[in-house]
Image 1 (cartoon, rainbow, N blue to C red):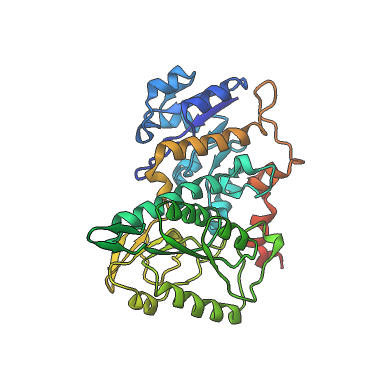
Image 2 (cartoon, rainbow, N blue to C red):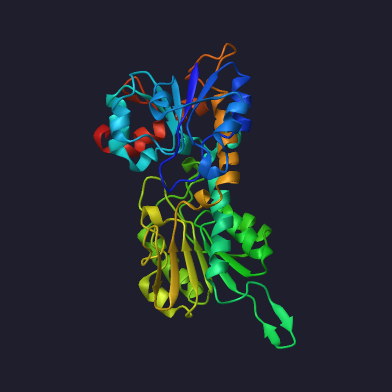
Amino acid sequence: MIIGLLKEPSGENRVALLPENVKTLIALNVELIVESQAGTAAFTTDFEFEKAGAKIGQRRDVLSADLVLGINPPTHPELEDLKAGQVLMSVFQPLSNKQLVEKLMSLQITSFSMDNVPRTTRAQSMDVLSSMATVAGYKAVLLAASHSPRFFPMFMTAAGSIIPSKVLVLGAGVAGLQAIATARRLGAVVEAFDVRTAAEEEVKSLGAKFVKVEGATDDKSAGGYAVEQSEEYKAKQQALIQEHAAKANIIICTAQIPGRKAPVLITQETVGNMAEGSVIVDLAASTGGNCELTENDRVVQKHGVTIIGNSNLASTMPLDASKMYGKNMVNFLKLLIDAEGNLNLNWEDDILANTCVTHAGEVMSPRVKNILFQTETA
């Protein structure tokens, strides 16, 4: 089997595999063809890929491979050139991209979306979302610190005492927990909010205070993700969050619901009540943002508050982010490659079955099917 590695589009600095991953895959009896300069933005040269055993080719060569992988999917015209039965593996965001899913179905392409890996113990080593969220949570705090006019830690100086910054983290998933840990290491006083009751213990273990809103719906069948809440709960949540947000110097927004618009947790009124010089970093910007005033991929100033909308902070740390993504990818590929290096699609494997979006013109993932096509099947 030939595996092709795509170069990512402009603005994306990561690469789906590094040379160390190529070595591992070649040991599994597969061939690798890498698009020329695929790793340049991640500080990795073609020579390093060749030294690891890969061949360097043009994009058309990579797109003709048996299994094509990347982080961002190919363009729609490029998808048209793929053959029925080819395997495509990247981050499709299928729960919010019905048009792409239908395109893949119509072209008879077997597609695996790495952001659809189930959040189970066995699949942890393949969980791209968690890996990239770790990077984003860490970088969000550093970004906030670089824009803030205040120190994070408390200082006792001859010129007087400097009080620590107050940081509020909205959403205590992987990104939120990493943000908490990083802010605490920098010496800030941290509070965190999450609708999932299971998050309270984790937040406290990192030395932060948990902002608790009673009455949350905690759906265990959601696989660890947040779920839609009642209007009554939303009203209580809004009031409590606004109270804590108005006192914060830094707010890190990470709250998202798969397949839905991000919940608005910081209103325009709240931003107006925050101290001038405060900073909001919104990691949910691409799905609407947790802050009402967030603009995706932009840094704006509103009411004296800096609001940074960036859902792809992992791209700003391309080397380590690529290392993590590549390791996740290799662990997943091992499920698909048999001893002779051929493709082996075992639909009895729950990880493979749940990660697969389309195969032979059908939607395979129960999660994608239920959320994206529930109206038609109801």
